[in-house]
Length: 128
Image 1: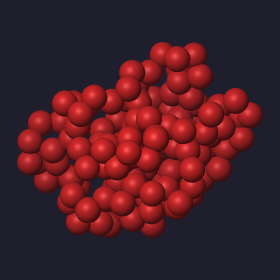
Image 2: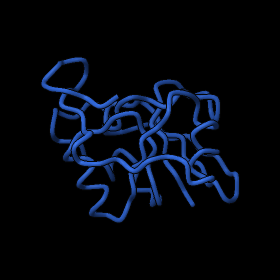
Image 3: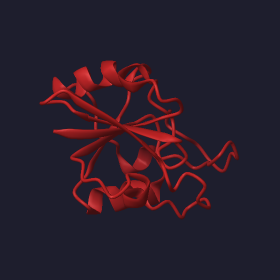
Image 4: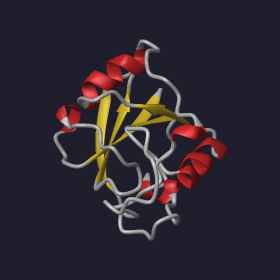
């Protein structure tokens, strides 16, 4: 299972999972079954609020899931429409969250838990 983790700093498996999907500077891609790791810079991180293009942010890579601390409603809908499950991260590293997802212990994001702010501008409530 291939999972994408948005992160602020590229520290591989030791990277801390970011609280926002679209504005993360990097994504760490982990194959939790094969233990491979790849880091990719987010080409869509400077998008306008509400205009996140999740597949562009993921560099067109196909993944089975995304693990993130927070995500906007539009990005969640687009990812789900493309068959990508979005999981709520626990505070900690990519490695810690990868172990939890492999064990089936991370909850799936619910549309009622999405973020209502972007780049530090508070628009509403956020679940993380």
